[in-house]
Image (tube, rainbow, N blue to C red; front, side):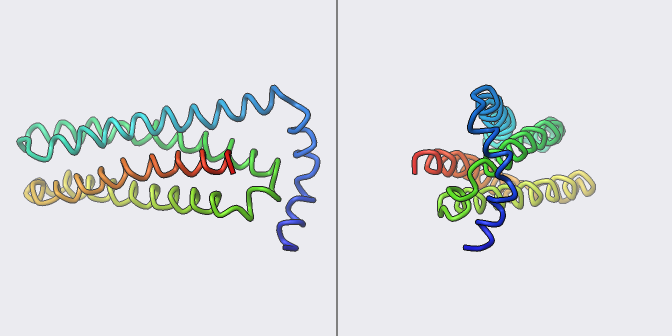
Length: 165
């Protein structure tokens, strides 16, 4: 794979530094896990609340949507922390990670998670703009929350498989 070898060569100074610095490895792993725990924890809690509210009144659902909307920013910050630290860990061992099917499985799960988040946000915005369609939007919100719940765990599973491969 010439591309993998070229990228590994470009990242060689970083890989050398990373492999010799326990502190750097610890900080990056902490940042990666903290981003996943913080962002994922908030998202999963919001997903659970959305699912539970599928039988609630429109008034309760409207309040919940406002709360869920407030979680988007910290969830994205957590994902950004995980993405930056993950990219740095990838750069430290490109030859191991890029050819790995576990790496690509995790990236697919992450891409699906991001797409689902965009879908969820779109449904939320439409429901808030057109209150008359609020009740009709809720089954899609509940479905998106279920997808989110599963995809967060799929991303974590991908990371575990990747680290143990």
